[in-house]
Length: 192
Image 1: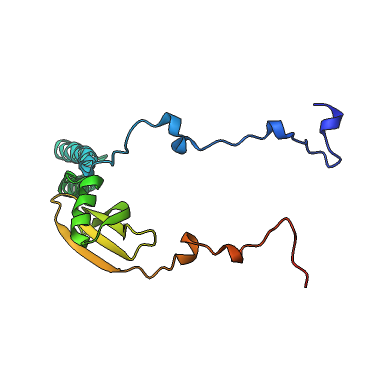
Image 2: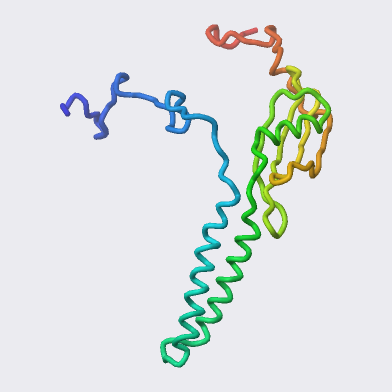
């Protein structure tokens, strides 16, 4: 680095050619590998198997070496707790059978208007973490007249709940702006 590249404050000056901007990895279209596959809820069974295996090991150690000074009732308590977590993991690890495309089709049929933009989000409800799709839909006009929120069960595809209402948002200024309201920034502020 030459002395000409260092400013008085001691920081290095950067030329315009050195300044670059690039998209984050997840937004780079050239590396697109296909549609996003939402992880299946049945993956919860993997830790459930690990918990159950650890519970069996704790129970065997407690049963075989219960008279040892290194083994006490804590092994049995740990086995019971781990077995409870394992049962919960097996019960909650139901397979997700409805993907976001299927949920969108169900939601479109439920709202009763042609759908333009829509967004799907996975959530879980209840003690047993039942997978549920939450679909937000807008009608297909340039300024959507209606919007809907639909909940679809991720296992059975049943319609859980829906809310359809007129769209309270006013997008009129965004769709057709009035050119008379524009100001020419090059001419500076108007002086009267």
